Structure formats: C-alpha cells, structure tokens
Image 1 (cartoon, rainbow, N blue to C red):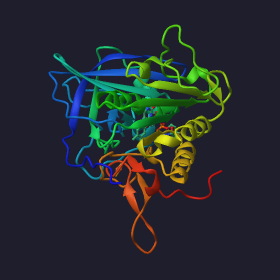
Image 2 (cartoon, rainbow, N blue to C red):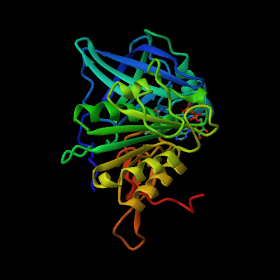
Image 3 (cartoon, rainbow, N blue to C red):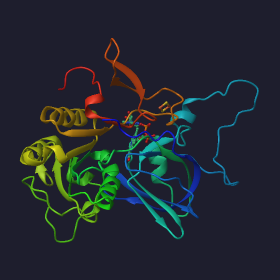
Image 4 (tube, rainbow, N blue to C red):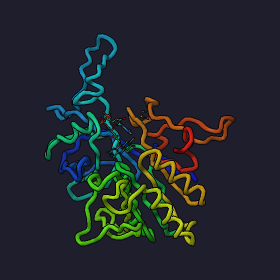
Length: 329
Ligand SMILES: Cc1cc2nc3c(=O)[nH]c(=O)nc-3n(C[C@H](O)[C@H](O)[C@H](O)COP(=O)(O)OP(=O)(O)OC[C@H]3O[C@@H](n4cnc5c(N)ncnc54)[C@H](O)[C@@H]3O)c2cc1C
Ligand code: FES
C-alpha cells in the first residue's frame, strides 16, 4: 500500500517560545513549544521537526557558525558535537494544539548526547529554532473504522500519542497502545489516578496520555518493574492472535529500536496484518539533501531493492517494504 507523501506540503523555519521543558521520568523530558499567531503548517502524526540545539541570537535569528568568506566553512568537532551542536536534531511530534493564541507543539525527548543535553537546560520563555514539519506521515484508513495497535518502544512512544489523538478524531473503533521500556523509571507517560497497569497483557485505561483519547494501553518492561515482564513484541503477538476475527481491519503502527520494529513487522506480515513502521535513522539535513539517512526499500529492479531517504521518502514505511540487514537475532 502506498503511504502518503508529504513532500508537497509546506514547511519552514520558525522561532518558537518554550512553554514547558521538564522531566517526565529519569531520562525523558516534555517540551512544549508555542508559535505566536499560528502560522505553523499543517502536521500529521508520524511527521517530525528538526530542533536547533543551539541558541537563538539577540536579533531573533538562529545563532550560526562564523564563516568569513575566505574559503570553505571549516567545522571542527566542537561545532558538530560540542555543547551547542551545529546540526539540528530530529524529533517526532507527540502532539499539536491550535489555540486562539497560536500553535503549540509537544515533543518528548530522551537525553542521550550533546544536543538533547543542551535542550534539557533550556528554560521556559526562551526560544528555539524549529524546522518543519518534515517527512511523510502514518496512513490512517478511511474505508473502515480501523482497529489500531500503537506500538512504541522507548523514544518510539511519543509519535504514538499524536497518532492516538488523530485516530480518536477520525472515529477509530478501538485503539490499544503498547508501550515498552527497559524499566519503570523510563516510562515517559502519566497514569490515570487509581487505575492499575495490568501484569497479564490485558489492555486497561491506565496511561493518561492514551486514555485521554479513548485508547487502552499495555505496558511492558524488560525487568518486570511495571506491567508485563518481557518485550513489547511478545505482548503484541498475544494480543494480535486474540483479534483473529478482525485481522482485515487491524493496523499496527510501530516505532522504537530497530530489532523491535523488525520483529513486529515480520510478525504482522506472517499474519497478513497491515503494519507501518516509523524508522529512525541518523539525520543531518532532515529534508532530502545530504543523503545521510538512506534505508533499503524493496523495489522492482534486478537487485530487489533501492535506497530511499528516511527523512523525505519516510520516516514511515510499510513493514513489507523495508529490507533489513542480516538475520533477526
Ligand atoms: C524521525 C526521527 C524521530 C525521532 N524522534 C525522537 C523523539 O520523539 N524523541 C527522542 O528522544 N528522540 C527521537 N529521535 C532520536 C533523536 O533524534 C536522537 O536521540 C538525537 O538526535 C540525539 O542527539 P544528541 O545530540 O543528544 O546525541 P548525539 O550526541 O548525536 O548521540 C548520542 C547517542 O544517541 C545515538 N543517536 C543519535 N541520533 C540517533 C538516531 N537518529 N537514532 C538512533 N540513535 C541515535 C548515537 O548513536 C549516540 O549513541 C528521532 C530520530 C528520528 C530520525
Ligand atoms: S537527513 Fe539529509 S537526506 Fe535525509
């Protein structure tokens, strides 16, 4: 099935004000950005923005790298990986809200290196450079009321929140979010007061970020500290097998570590269930120029595949389109 291309939609660079930037769990932050007066192009779940993890200048523009016109721009390790990295960092949209005062974007990010560490120190009222929206989006079926499984592992969970909101808006029949992480202290989500996370894989309305949109959730942790002990793909497999009567209406959306996405994709293909994967590759430009984000996608040519760009052809691809390297271990 063809996934919608967003290349023709508008994008731009924006200076946005930080409304909130606070810890959600041991490693993840919630970032809420505000663009006064609206004007941020239309967005869809699955799309991402490139965040400038360096300061905005006093004149309101982005603080750039000095280039004296005497030759090639000479970048050193400090510009690329220093405290204020040159390259923007890709982040999925976890939510969007249009109000009378403007547009709000939500991002949930995990601190893993220089850029996200810089981001975590940004305070309320400061400004950030945002390029976007970028990439294609998840495809939402309009022909039937879909039954949707939203599968997120670690930093793959945020785009599933935006997807849950959109599925609710289009009247999805049933949505279940599967949230996997290593341990309970890495859950970047809030609980519904008084609700219990089930330890047997039964979906419950326990996670507030999904329950808000009528979606039930299943939580798995590798160490068993919350929800079901084990991998999120195991809980997903058991649940899919209980939906056998509705397989043709079921759509599985996945984002997370590559091994998890591959396992979920192969499981769905084996059962004839539609599955869409949001791939995360290293990105520099984020808009199809630098070729740093290639992925192998099946093609009708002698070798059976071709390189596509994760940032502009994706990041969402059908599970059957992706060519994985080596055996699944
Ligand atoms: C389309 C897309 C959407 C994303 N959405 C989110 C999101 O919603 N929330 C979130 O926390 N992160 C998300 N990421 C990953 C995020 O972009 C990286 O974690 C971030 O760029 C790291 O920047 P850094 O400077 O802090 O780390 P760096 O110093 O650049 O790297 C630190 C560590 O993170 C690893 N890393 C860096 N970039 C990536 C990447 N693209 N994929 C996998 N590992 C990486 C490096 O190998 C290294 O081990 C997304 C990535 C893509 C491509
Ligand atoms: S990140 Fe530059 S082409 Fe994809």
